Amino acid sequence: MRSLAVLLSGTGTTLQNLIDVIAAGELPAKIAVVLSSNPNAYGVIRAQQAGIDVEIVNRKEFNDPVVFADAVNARLSRYDVDLLVLAGYNHLVKLDRRRNIPAINIHPALIPSFCGKGLFGDRVHKAVLDYGVRFTGVTVHFVDEEYDHGPVILQEPVEVRYGDTVDSLRSRVQQVEHRLYPTAIKLFVEGRLRIEGRTVVILPRQKDEGGRMKDEKRSNE
Ligand code: GRF
Image (cartoon, rainbow, N blue to C red; front, top):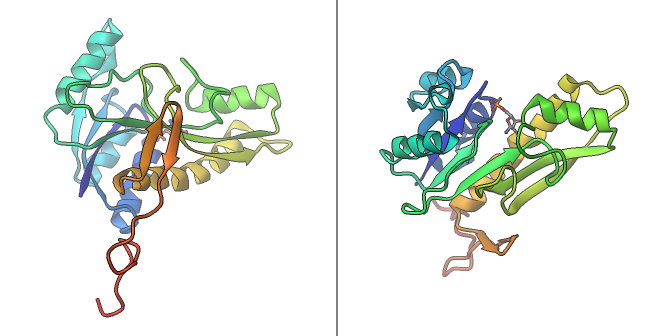
């Protein structure tokens, strides 16, 4: 079973969705640890309620973002995880080259629009509405060491409607997020993502010797 570390800074709706999807048996993975950069994040309470180990590395206790990122990695190194899942985590990650653990992120817009340093959460939706675009959306991408920059795994557009507010837009975007993130994580868990330059190739599901898809149940099982 693949093991995840979820990193967050805020309310943790993304974490809650992952907890629920895993509990429903729809994502074959385990959340080994939730790391929060904010001791008061509601996501911490959600993790505790689900019985998941929590680590706090308080961003406010660090002047230097690189020292902070190193402290995050040091804390995560206590856990055996296969993937870092950023879930409303508002800081740059320093990839741990020694352990070579990939990281993915979800962004509430269509990258490369409305993204980058300082554009997270409701600021994204406000920028979308201020600009007047007809479509926004959701992007799941691998993380590199720039904000919202690594290779794109999945994207889906969301229409912006006349009269939309930050609240109404966030709510429709989140419905898509809650489907797209588990889908992307499942593809990773199944070993079906291959990075070629900036392109992420989604590999077909593997068949077993009997020609069945690997996760297909036999009728007599
Ligand atoms: C989501 O919009 C997600 O795209 C972004 O953070 C927001 C959710 O925050 N990365 P949270 O999970 O409710 O803390």
